[in-house]
Amino acid sequence: MEKIAIFPGSFDPFTVGHESIVRRAIPLFDQIIVAIGYNSAKSGYFPLEKRKNWIIDIFKNDVSIVVDTYEGLTTNFCKLKNAKYLLRGLRTAADFEYERAIAQMNKMIETELETVFILTAPEHSFISSTIVREVIRYGGDASKFVPKEIDLTL
Ligand code: ADP
Image (cartoon, rainbow, N blue to C red):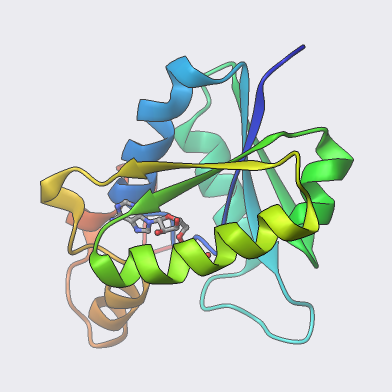
């Protein structure tokens, strides 16, 4: 059976930290679906289509990476896609506490689902979409924190 993993997130915007987690997970799975979770009642900082097209561009040469969007429970999206693995990145102890609760909750909802964690590379441990948005909002240069395919000036 094909090993399919979902990498869920807001990716607002996708950062070099996210890219590194996906690239390091490529050898582990037959397919990784980078899944942008959205809430139709709340718009993000960058439009959903833009976030999606950026990620498609970043992985255009990686055949096992697919990009999709979903609304609602991540576990429902996993079922829909027949994915048995959730991929998440861990930066800090705070991430661990937050992720632990979500992973344990997801396991209660969907017993077949395993969450696989990859530890961030040290040079990415301070990078978050929230901080990148703050830098942009105040006119700073955030280009170092996002993959080169993302042109934040557009
Ligand atoms: P969410 O809104 O679910 O927190 P994010 O888009 O912020 O989604 O992040 C998606 C996943 O990527 C999470 O598992 C998060 O911990 C991980 N992540 C975010 N930034 C980094 C980073 N710099 N290094 C490694 N993992 C990261």
